[in-house]
Image: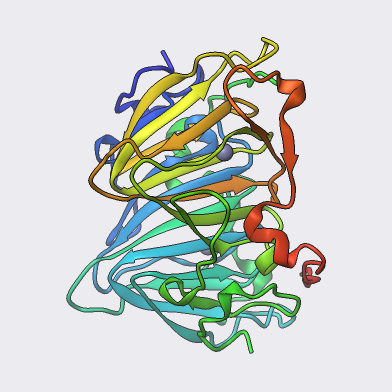
Amino acid sequence: SAAVATADGSLCATDGIPIVRNISEITQDSFPIPGLSHITVAGALAHGFKEVEIWLETVAPGGGTPIHRHSCEEVFVVLKGSGTLYLASNSHLKYPGTPQEFPIFANSTFHIPVNDVHRVWNTNEHEGLHFLVVISRPPMKAFIYDDWSMPHSAAKLKFPLFWDEKCYHQAPPAKDEL
Amino acid sequence: SAAVATADGSLCATDGIPIVRNISEITQDSFPIPGLSHITVAGALAHGFKEVEIWLETVAPGGGTPIHRHSCEEVFVVLKGSGTLYLASNSHLKYPGTPQEFPIFANSTFHIPVNDVHRVWNTNEHEGLHFLVVISRPPMKAFIYDDWSMPHSAAKLKFPLFWDEKCYHQAPPAKDEL
Ligand SMILES: [Zn+2]
Ligand SMILES: [Zn+2]
């Protein structure tokens, strides 16, 4: 029942999810991104959300996200650690080009302008980088680049994302409307 | 310039906002909700976001949100403290009625089903309740109830929300599309 707090949050929900969940008890899966640990706190494919999705991620020193872009809004809140945001804003060119570098740190927030190519990296050798990610219009359709000089047209669509692969063949639950 | 990290986040942005901001340096305003301290981390009226909005709120012991409902998705992530979610799911009745009570705690997440009437309260006498709130389709149009037996039709629209009042007469910034 939705009235009971459980640790059921890692399922592919087709029948609603508990109202309250303990994030510590949500399963962290492993994915082919070295050093990245990911929890879907609130997901479209995983939990039936339609308009927002929230992730909790930890990146080990020397690790980070692929170079990628997407057309949704994306906002980060850094909870712990520090690192670097690499952001290529020249979307009018044929390829991202050399990105700008922004220091990120605990209690900072940053956003990714729609369709800008970016990567978040833990450039701190000593501690993990922990952050929350909020995206709009889930599930995310991400285009991944091998490097900053790969043409936009050659970037590869990764859909569903790694953590959504197990849920992709299940439709999200229908919701009651008032 | 958007390339410089500044503490400029509390402005009503009409010309873009810095990519990285320090949440500690964003101004907390006071509002007529006793015990509630609010920071708009990423806002529609405040910063020009169109699809998601993120708040960081702290509620003093014995304080909380008004009883209210809204048609957007809303997800909470509790960072510190504990409290109670009051949630009335009987939206088919003419008034909310006695709500269910859910314990909430640090490292828990909870969501509010669309249009369900709810209140978040710090029922812990000893420490503040700190949480992040994510909403879809900002700015929020909230309907506020005096109590749980007030008819849905009598709930009062509060728009813009208290923290958006200073930005309401300024249009959000135009965004480039790729
Ligand atoms: Zn991204
Ligand atoms: Zn609410």
